[in-house]
Image (cartoon, rainbow, N blue to C red; front, side, top):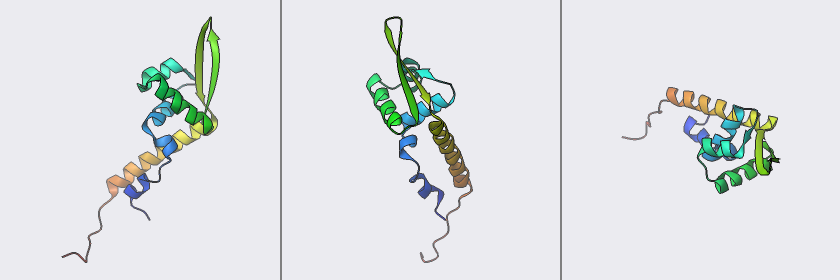
Length: 113
């Protein structure tokens, strides 16, 4: 059985990347969010947020809808069911790893003087 620290390396990097994890976590708490709301909550620049949203959309974790509010363009983003499962499972795994790490004790190396 791998050590808890070794399991950290096997986390889904698509979801675990800090900016994407922040986006997915925000979206998991609401039905949908507009671009500016996501930008404000995540602290990302427009370009950085746009890039991460594109990556999440390509992975089929989120949906993106473009619309107009009057004459102003507006981008609405929401989690697909697959995205909701991915972020929920990721947080569950992180919590389990944290608990395993708290219980972990190093095995003494008997061959070392």
